[in-house]
Length: 155
Image (cartoon, rainbow, N blue to C red; front, top):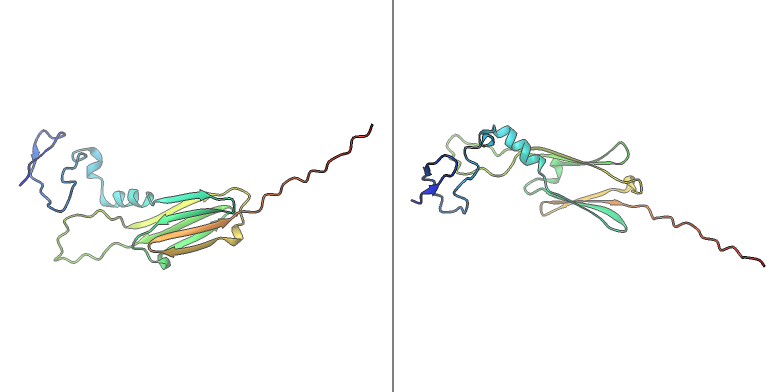
């Protein structure tokens, strides 16, 4: 069994996991290491990964939601220009006979809000879910270019 040094406790750990590359936890012993699981879930859910890009035609949001069904996700418009993406990943049912070796996937509610600029068509928002990725497209209004009228100069 591999012995892993612990820089924070001055001791050694006999943790051995043949299927993991991260057998040593450098944060073990830190104050946040003993945070309740509910707080860890909240932190993990708050970190729902979202990409937001603007193209000439639209604002496009891509949200990683692996393992979540589209029925468990809501896409809403609040106060005219706020895009709200929310949902919940339910915790896996635990059997009393199960022995968990590692729990890294987060569960619980998530919610993200984005204030969009004035040049969007909030009534034409489209959303689709494919392979665990939610894509939300918010079309933009065409930019009105100012009409330029040349003036003849007399003289």
